[in-house]
Structures are given as structure tokens and as C-alpha cells.
Length: 101
Image (tube, rainbow, N blue to C red):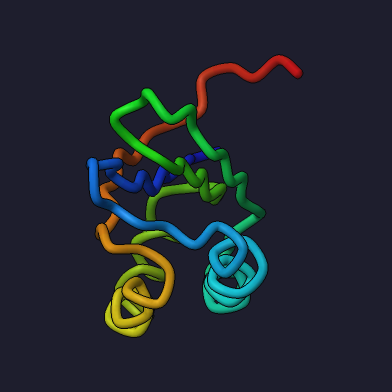
């Protein structure tokens, strides 16, 4: 399984509407990406001392699925970022090696 983190930068004056992101934005993103193979996602609010405020992990079986979803919907997703965040996210794609819960 492949994981694609979307991480929002935390600056002294950055803003982030977690309620909107959690209840509106990411369910919408999931509805767009699910036909491309998205399995699910995890949203984590990071501690206030961290350099980032939010980390969202998106789960796909492989990189091709993620890249197809991104190519199809990136512009419309990025157009909505100002509705919940003053900062645009960065991504660090990778493969899941191990998970213990």
C-alpha cells in the first residue's frame, strides 16, 4: 500500500479551519479520489510546537492510482484550499513498510 501525506505548514500567523477540513473538504476529496483507488485517509492535528499543523495521510494501493487522481482533480482541490487554510500543503509520497496498531 502507498501513502501520500499532505502536510500543512504552521507559521506564527497561519490559520486552519479543522472543522471545515474534517467535515467538508476531506470527505469531498475522498469522493473525488475513491474512483481512482483511494482506500481511506487519516487526519492528524499536530502539537502546537510542531513546524506543521496538520498531517493527512491518503491511502492507495499504488502510486499510479494516486497520480491519476491528482492529475484529474488537483486544480479544483487547490482552488478550495483558501476556504480552510492560509497555507498550501506539501506532500511526501512513500510506501508503507510496517504498521502496528
